[in-house]
Length: 102
Image 1 (tube, helix red, strand yellow):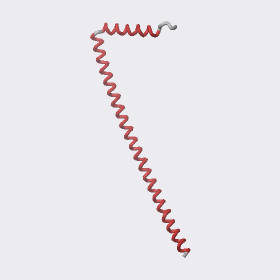
Image 2 (tube, rainbow, N blue to C red; image 1 turned 90 degrees about the vertical axis):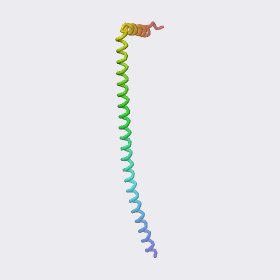
Image 3 (tube, rainbow, N blue to C red; image 1 turned 30 degrees about the vertical axis):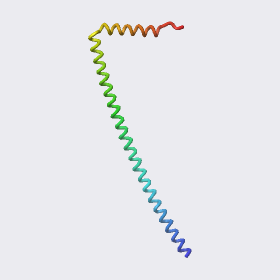
């Protein structure tokens, strides 16, 4: 009887170890899939971020170009006004930079 019980316990233990091995294998597989999924999600997010930055840069270039065109037209229409403005700004900058220090 004792030998029979011992044999039964060994058999149950062997079955339990085998099932644990299968469970560990499944966990490894699941972790691999999870890691792969995380990498793909990160790549997609990075791609979206790159596209967003690209669009923002393009929009900034367009706005800058439009502003430059408007400024050129204004300077061409009133050149003496802008020469005077530039001279006045230069004078103010010079006064701040070269003011006496006490």
